[in-house]
Image (cartoon, rainbow, N blue to C red; front, side, top):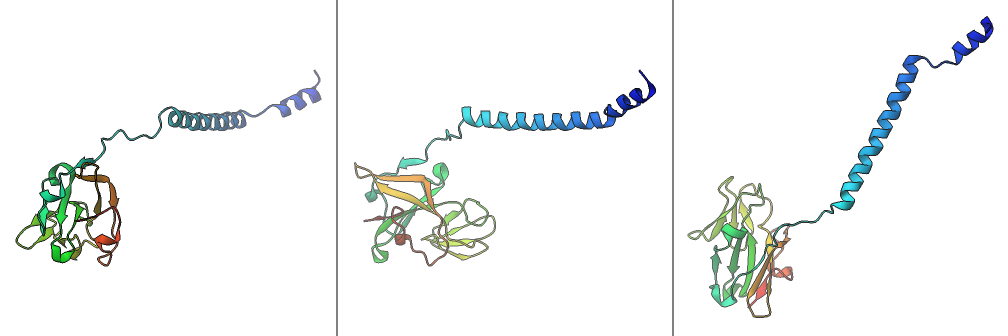
Length: 180
């Protein structure tokens, strides 16, 4: 091999640094493809299904609830108050979430003041769930109610209606109250 031929073959060689950069970039692309494919593989074979127990339950019969009273028996297990309005208010039944709309604390019912009170930050709600004091900006959420075939009340805590303001009445939202 002559000197000019040797010089040409040395010029065609890839420098070590360029070779390592090329190798590293190809490795990074291959790794990215493998990660994306593994995520798609997992999503295909393990679908996003919730295996949580349904929060629908039977809550007795309408006659079990007294007019103008708040029933607290499902507060501990389901986080729900069931309220029956008085005949003067329209005589209907509705369910309220026991979670404060401010930060999610469990509210308590104060029988003397006929109001719900949040122990965390002092938000207060009327018996219909409308906020009137404290940092909460929205009324308590409504929980879906219906009558089952046997005449008992079906409460579905998975179906929640988020009221935006006090102007939105309970009877405006079908499926979230029972007229008696």
